[in-house]
Structures are given as C-alpha cells and as structure tokens.
Length: 628
Image (cartoon, rainbow, N blue to C red; front, side):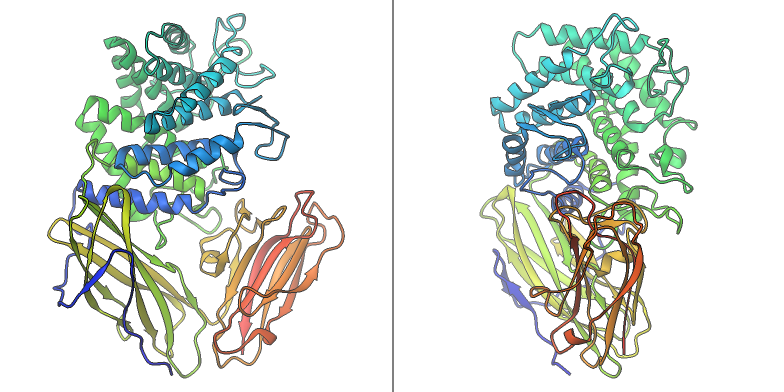
C-alpha cells in the first residue's frame, strides 16, 4: 500500500504559509443574493468550463454555427461584466478564421457566403451582434465594420411587399418571424448607438420596431409568438423564451437611441408578461416549452433561455426595478444550487429536473445558456477582489481493489483577482466522507493578484484514500477556500466507486468514464459519435490486483476502435470496413483489456471514424466494463 503523499503546491504565484485554519462556513451557506465577489467567481468557473469546448482550429464550438455566435457573445458579456480579458484571443481567432467563404457542412449545414452571412438570415444577425460585442470590448474598428457589413446584407431581406415589411427568416423568403426581426431591431439600434452622426440605422430600427409591434406576433397576453402565417397573421406558435427576450432587448436598445418613454412602457409590458403566472417562469424559474419532463430540447432550444437572460440583464441594469433584479437573483441561485455538477457543468433545466426517459442535458450549449444567468447576477460595477476554486478531476471514478484502500489524486485549482501587488492570504479546508482520509486537511497560502484582466492561479494536490470495502456509489470530497471575512468559495470532487461500468452514452452516468471527449458529439441518450478526425476515449481504472478485464460497446456505423494501457500508445482492435450510415451494423462488441492490466495502468478504449471524409463516424449506444 502506497504511503499518503503530502501536499504539493504548483508554483503559480502561491507562497505556502505555515498556519492552522479555523473551519470556515461554506460559501453560499447564508440565504439571499450573492455578494459581487461570489457572483464574479461563479461566472468565472462557468465561463472557463464553457471555453473548454471551444475548438481553436475551426474556431467555433462544434458543431453549431449560430449557437457558436451566441456562445462567443456570452463570453464577451462575461468579459465585459467582470473585467476578465483572457478570451479576447479566441474572439479574434474566430473572426480571422471564419470570415471567409465555406462550403456546406464545414462550419454549418448551409454554405457560408463570407463575412459570417448565409441563407439563414437570423444566423447572420447573431454574428453581427457578436462582433459589436467584440468592438465594445476592444474598440477595434474591424469588428464594428463587420457588423455593418452583416447588417447591409440583412437589409436586403427587408421586404415591404409582404405583410407590409419585416425581414425574411431565410434566403428563400418563406417565413417572417419574431427572432429575425427582434435581432434586426437590436442590431440596427446597436449600430446607431456606436456610429457617430448615424441616421440610417436609427431609421431602420424605428421602422423595424413599428412593424414588429403592429405585426400581431405580440399576443394579447403580452407574449411573443414565433411568427406569421402566409396571410400575415400571428401563427400562435410556441412562445419561446428567446423571442420574448429579444423583443425586450430590441426595445431597450432603441430606447437608448431615442429616449422615447413609450418604448420602455412596451418593454415593461413584455417583461411583466414573462413573469406572470401564465408566463415563462412557473414557480419563478425560467422554463422553456421543451424543458417539460416529457420533452427534450433540441440543440437550438438548449440556448434559448440564455438569450432571454442576456436581455433581461439589460432590463434589470437599465431600470433597476427590484422585481427584475430579484428575477435575476432567483435564476442564478437555482442554477448554481440545483443545475450544476461537480465540474461546474450547467444543465438545460435550471430547476435541475431530470428523469430516466428525458434526462437533464449538459453540453456547451446549456453551459452558455446558464452562464448568461450567472453573468446577469454580477454587479454593474464588479468588485476588484474575487476568489474561486475548482477540482480536477471533478468526477473521478475508481474500480477498487479487493483488500487495500485506493488512492485518488485530486487537484484543487484557485483563481483570484485583486489590486496589483496586493498579497491575498487564502486558507483551504478539505473534508471527505466518514472513514476516508484527505491529506492535507488544512493549509494556508498567499496569492499575488495582478488586477482582474488575468486572474492569478495556483493549485494544490490532495491525496484521497478510499477505504477497502467502500460500497459502490458517489462520494463528495470538498475544499473550501477563504480569504478574510469576505471571500469564500467551495468546490467538490464527486468520486464514483464502481466495480463495473454500465452506462448509456449521452447521460450523466457516462461522464465519469469519458476521459477525453475530443470533438465527439452526443445528441441525446444512447448517441455519442465521432465524425471526421474527432474521437472519444473511455478510461476504466482497473485495480492493480485485477487478473482479467473486458469492455463491451454497443456500436455501429463507420468505427475504428483502439485499446491502450496508458492512453498514449494505441492498438487497433476493430475496424468497420463498409460505409454504413444508418446503424444497420449495430451490435454489441466485446474487447479484451487483459493485456493492458498492471500497476499504474488503466484500460482505455478510443472510438474514431473509419471513413473520416463522409461524416458517419462510430456511434456508441451503451458501454459496460468488468474485471476479476
């Protein structure tokens, strides 16, 4: 049995100080809204988790074009509201790499026409707003010029010959809807408010608002239906949260341009309708139509609530109405308390509701959406000082030995902001389940912040001993970092103890075993796939006293399966040589992992695409792994 290791501090501006730490209260233990420092810290860890999904080569979030625009816009909001500037290079990377012409399927289902435009007019508008956000952050005129170029393209789809006006939703001119026209008003009003002596875009924004508010899409309850029928009447279709939010945001930006009080009256009507008992927030929690327990949101719907919350933040900051501010506070609190896992992933349903048939979804789209609610809770004048903590791995899994305890290494990462040159003393307290040993239990260190544009970082390593005979289950190891009486933040690592792996892909049960998701995707339960040159890897930490081991994957389409004992050197164990596209070769295939057993090893399975050029890579439905 290995001896327990003492603390290792990675030098990242941290200095150890020998001192005892009195047990601090857990962050969030007191009711009421967060203070500004805690709100900043929560937004930071959620933003970092989101940016872990950013793919720098194609410069987007795979594999959604308009969703990527909104996710980057959300990161821009985060930077603007916290002072953190670490992700400006990613914004510029996307701008420079993706402004060209691309064929269908490279970055979108549609061909991209250059300058972030396509036949999807609303997609083009999302990118226009993203580049205005980048301009606000940097004052680099190239971003604002791009937004003007996009607006000029969209302007060609304003058509008064149909329904008296409005922007068409698509290049084929088949539908006029709320999202495209809400975006149009916000985009043109934002341009006016940033272009000196502009009259043109202000005129377009006013024209758009007049048409939209008279179109019938705002129903008698003050809620925004999706669009118009062919005879120019409201189709009465679903009230999606993002349509409501965009209408609010459009009115607010136009009000900033004109100071017309009638605009705020309409905006308040829209907001009050959203909060009403028959509105969009049953029980006070913003809820999408597809958030119902018997439904699942598609990849578009996953991001709608965040768009609503972005413009609700604008509403609360503009009006300072306590009702709107309280709504912001409520959304942020329920997400953090009910809709977050140990790795700070934020889910689709902000209430945390889940079930076996329609589990709560977690991916970068849901992360971006919920992040907008956390950003909204950050004060308009954020504090300079903040402190956050995370764990890595946040969801480790162990397959325990028979007679000896099992050691798990967990790294606690710290980030802090504060006045440059200030010494920020930080105390850390750790704890585990009864009978477990977490070393060290307490320590002190000092961080040296350098402002808030780039948080200072440090990390410490914990040695966790899981006793032999621990039943299968999930167990939390916690770490609480405090500095003085004002800064406190708690994080946890949820350690899964399991004698076998047995999970559907696309579920929370898959997450602890998914060692590297790379560019793979999961569109629901039993549906993880890797197209092109992407892959995904499962890790099975078989114990040192195991003598045999195997893994079974239910898999189909065009797969390559490889095995490894160290996650670096791979042996191909199965290849589909036929171009299957529709799952007709689905089968449960078992792979012997016994050759990869041994001290310091684990069983790794890597799934990739055997025909990387046609987009039908290996798809896995279910995974089991066992040992003796």
